Amino acid sequence: MITTVAYVLAILLNLLILFIGARFLAVPRAAASGYGVPAKENGDRAYLLIKGLRDGTYGLVGLALLAFAGTQAEAWFMIVVALLPLGDTVIVLRNGGTKAVAFGIHFATAVTIIVCAVLLFLA
Image (cartoon, rainbow, N blue to C red; front, side, top):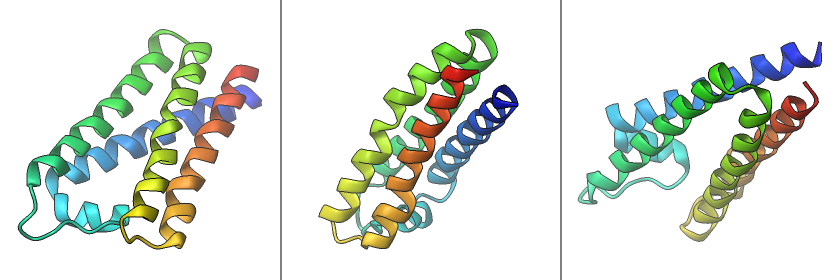
């Protein structure tokens, strides 16, 4: 049972980050608003595209690890990747975003990723 939950949660989290990356590539300004720090109209669009590429790549790497290296490799990957939403929490708070977005989206994501990693270690 734990194995099934761990795999399903890992797949969903990787697909979600892949979707977020694709959204930053397709509609960067709207994605930035959803992130919690809206992009300036005259801002450098390249940075938003870089975030999209980064997130999409992490989603693909996570899926590849799960498929080809197994749960232990994916669990360690998730532990490392949890640093990103923790950093995102700080970025949102320091750049005028709301606490609701910082903690309700980014910090909650980090906690979910860590829970997933623990389940993967147990699987």
